[in-house]
Length: 327
Image 1 (tube, one colour):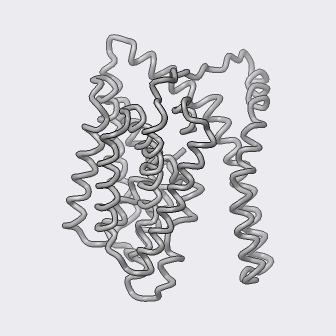
Image 2 (cartoon, one colour; image 1 turned 180 degrees about the vertical axis):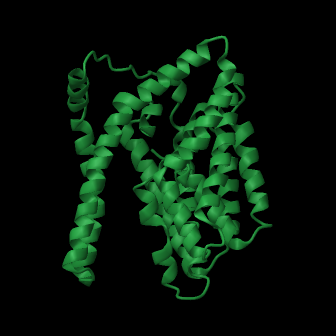
């Protein structure tokens, strides 16, 4: 979905760039865990570099780069990269607290990677094309429309899941760790994931996104367009409760902190944070204020506060920024 926002960049170039960013920064995250490097120090260095680069790219490109940091951490990636496994390799008492922070690395990596092509591509050369709502008279028409638009997503999800399945197969072949029952459960999980992602991506492209565009255009073009702010805040507050990646993080945090930070409290804090953030985003849409005036102060404030809170909360906070934006 992100690649569609930058028509001037070939889809495969943007996808490979984002994937490279995630891979490189995840490697850096594993190195941090193994050598017990302070997460706040790493994040301060990385975000300082990102902020410095942001002044040399077009504003439209900066907006897409900022979005790429959130969309890469969703229901597929978060369960795989929550770092309990890599952290537990150390075996010391701080290993599990250091498991938090991998999602933060996966969020800043794509931002950095997408900013780099900003010097070579000019998003102003491309025009934005809005999605059209599907016109269907009966349920049968709707089913036919969805089925006709589904084949590209069947291939896309298959290509995306094959490398993950290949890694699992190679690991099992070498280690022989999993028993037959466990393998059967994992294969069923792959099946559920495949079907769910195909239906989800098709539903977003054919139904969800076009309707969202239509509603947004209607509100923004009316005399009461200021309603975008409270409506955005309301949706932002409640949408968090439906985000699967957030539930993964919340239960991870509750487990690592032995219940000191309950999942319910995490959910409430994230709901408030996303609500305020969406409200500010709608305000930016209405006023036309450059995105730097919102993003850079937010990052700077978070980085400054990271030096005054317990170490474990740094990982929780920056991981939350990645998981809050998913399907």
